[in-house]
Image 1 (tube, rainbow, N blue to C red):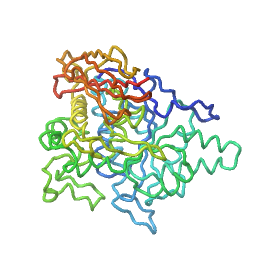
Image 2: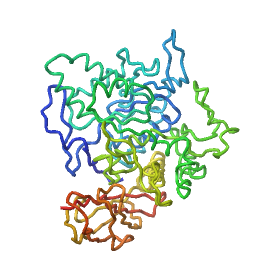
Image 3: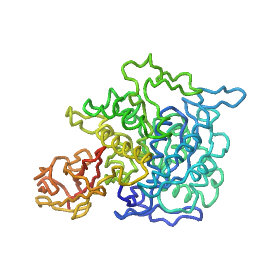
Image 4: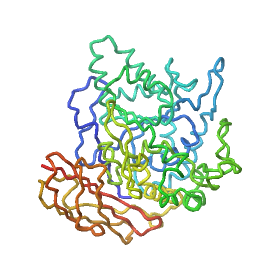
Length: 487
């Protein structure tokens, strides 16, 4: 892993306001290396939240984690001890247990990359939110108060709130801010500036608080809305992932890279028909060996919430956090009235528009990357594990050119482990705003060129991906996304 900060700031570029005391403007997008993304994870204890949280811990060095909050959803809630009984409630202690197991791999992870948070820090960030009932946001809780405090803190950069379950605890935090300031002279500006600072990544609508409270009361707050794309990395993956890529989710791959000899934390990783029930969730039968026979024992089960943080992983060079329309390991999105919603890419295997392909096109790459980190956790010496190569482009990652102009791009790769490298250039046409395609002079070499088409209009963008792959085990990639804007 090359130790660089992450390019950041798609929501920040338009902000030039002076914020009131307690609020800070997101950092300006610069193309340099500003701070890691500030994130709060909110989850509900579904089995796929558990698996997503394990992956998240292996990538925890890539984020400025501001909170880990337990919430409820239509699928899981604790009950109120009186009129509302618990429903599929998996309890709140499993997360502390996972952090304890993270502590066992933490010393090795630090040998391979900088920035992993200490187990003590993660424990301090864990808060219980509104968990009594689906959509419950009637009272302040430890979790909602923590989100409220974090929103109001004087820190630079966007605050990404990731909703793996319901949004009710986040809604309660926003309502508490509204109740405190509404009617005051400060309120219009505070509401506007929070709306520009907070970005919610919503996985499905797992309660009614987004449409029932947040959108009506915070109409300008930005939402990255993943309503269907997440299914391609969830329980139904065998219907959505291209056949040629499914090997990275099948039992032999899972057993070799995650389930065998990878330490105590990954021993908790759930897979199909693995014989491991989830205490409290009596409706989850996916662990039963005698059921779900379309999957093999130890096939991948689900990480439907992982796209919420995968799209912020710009260490890979895809720059997806700069703008959700760019696409990356967390999928790709199109603008809508409240921010962005999941969209389609052309499936390169079928030639047809496919709402799953913005996520599934990356499955082998992101699985190999996770496999490498899984190995880091049990490998005490840097020299004994594989690490990402480093891709760069001499001309930089933002270019301008006129219609009819030839553009030449010189890529370069290096590898911290001395591995042999291969190169690939390709056009991410779905991310382009130019409506056609370009012809690359070379696709399997470090250097390529193309001529901007004559019909390209000023302002059109062309997205080219320079991909460097090493020959280590597992094979790892690093990319550079070059965006050529027509002038």
